[in-house]
Length: 88
Image (spheres, rainbow, N blue to C red):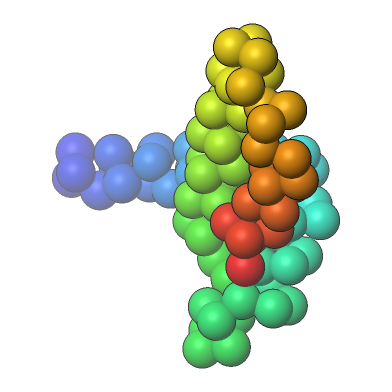
C-alpha cells in the first residue's frame, strides 16, 4: 500500500515537472514529438518530456558554466546545435 502511494506521488511529480518543461522547452518537445526515433515507435509520454527537460537543464547549466569561465565563445555554434541534437 505504501509503495503504491509513493508510486502515485512520483508519477504526479513527474507529470507536474513534465508540464513545466513543456512550457519552458516547447520547441524542443515539438522536435521530440515529430522527428525523434522514439516518436516513430510510440507516443511521447510525460516521463519522456521530463527526461528531455532534465537533459536540457543540465546542458543549460554546462553552457552557463562555460560562459562564466569564458570558454563558450570558442565553441562557436556548437551550443545551439547541441540543444537540437539533445531533442532529436
